[in-house]
Each structure stands twice: as structure tokens, then as C-alpha cells.
Length: 121
Length: 134
Image (cartoon, rainbow over all chains, first blue to last red; front, side, top):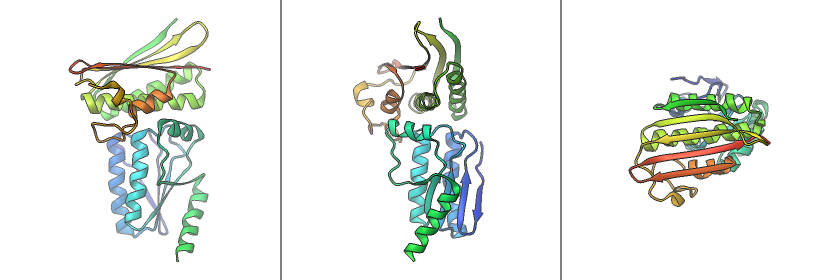
């Protein structure tokens, strides 16, 4: 089973998914991330899916679950780098990822988190 | 003319990944656009996972088909699980007997050009989908 590394940059945790993940690895990532949010006191989570070729309903649900879970642990989640073909496919599949914030790339994702924090202060 | 037939077992999560990768390779070979490759691989992932989760496993076959005008990819997912008592209901978005989102079957149908499902209680389920190159 692959384990996805979770990087910490200031009070943001960054996950970059680089391989085609098995369902078990996806579930492990959710748990690892919840632990890291609490242990580091992170205020933001960025999930980079630039390298992800497909998002099916399982991965889609993982993104929504991580966003909801992080919110309960006082952290905001932003999904960055979604490919256009993935966005088209997700909508047709019926998954709009309503509760998940997105940004086009890592830089914009970081800016979004910083903006959220400065306005909620 | 048809060709490139491949039978793949679906008995574990790793097999679902292998099915996705095989479908991706053949989708490129057959000349599907990037968006259509993404759609058919996503549909394959949903259907392979369905066979694993609801039937405890099954097998997938992937072949390149040609109708004289266009080439395409035909995928079959066969299991010997409990079958689906009410196919119309199973194709409805949001309906599930498992823990999923209930998007797998209905969503997969929207992602492909042809979709055929045969199932009977106790007899297993076969889903065959085709995606044509444009």
C-alpha cells in the first residue's frame, strides 16, 4: 500500500498525490491527515491533484470528507491543480464537490488560505 | 475488426488500479481524446469497484472494437455476485445498498456512449460499456 507524504509549511499541510491510489491508501490518507492537523495545529490543508488523471466517486468522496473533517478540526481545505478533463468528468459523473474549495494551482491555493485567515481575524 | 482483448481479474483494490491502467493504455491506443480517455477510465474504475464491493470480485475484459466508421473501446465487467433485483433503481443517482455515494452505475452510464446491464438475483451482473473515438 502506498502512503502519501504530508508536508508542513508554516501552518499549512500540503499533500501532493503523485500515484494512482488504491482505495485502502485513500482511507489511510484521511486518517493520517486528521492526526497531522491535530498534532501540528495546522489551519490550512492543500491537496494537490495536478498529477491525478482521474477522480472517481471514491476519490471525490475522499476530497469532500477531508474538507469536512478538517473544518471540524479548525482547518480550511483547498484542492488545487484539477485537470480540465477531470473537472468535466466529475460533473458528468454527478459529483460537484459542493463543499470543497478549489484553486487552479498551489500558489493560488496558498493565497486563498491566507486571504481566508486575514478576513476571519 | 476487433482486437486487443484482455481479461483482468478483479479480486482486490490493486486489481481495480490495474484495470484503470490497462483501460488508460488502450484508450490512448484507440485514439480517444483526452477528455474521453478520462471519462472511460473513470467509468472503468466505478464498475470495477462495484464488482469488488458488491459481488466480492469478478473480472473485466477490455477490447478495441471497430464498427467500420469509428474505433472504440468496449469494456465488460462480469461478476457472479448476488445480482441486482431492480436495475432501474440501481441506476438512479444516490441509490445504494453499500456505503458509496450511489453514483457508480448511473454516473458510469453518462460517461460512455453505450451501456448495457444484465443482472438477475443470484445470477450475477454483467455491465458492458463502449466509448467511441470521435
